[in-house]
Image (cartoon, rainbow, N blue to C red; front, side, top):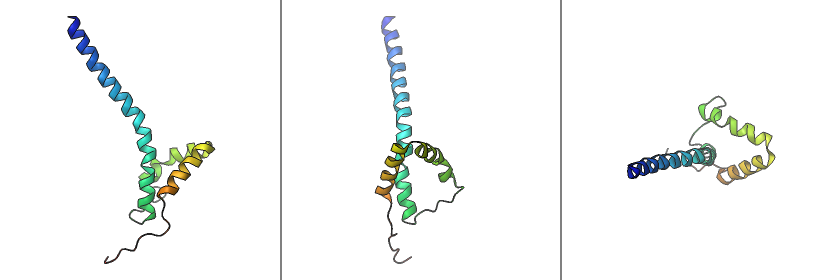
Length: 93
């Protein structure tokens, strides 16, 4: 009886740990995906309109960064790593 209780507890603990890990990684993935999106946009591979889903998805980050100058500096620095001034020439297209 005690052995089955321990197994049940262990299984629910693993699920809880996985859930907490996912919840902690989601914000990092959200912010981290901004860099590749900036690169895709700056190289002309995608276009982002003002009312597009991508623009709307990142408005909360823009709002929080505007209210918190250290975060704004960090986000701007991260975006600068991915931004390219000149799109590569598409030869043959």
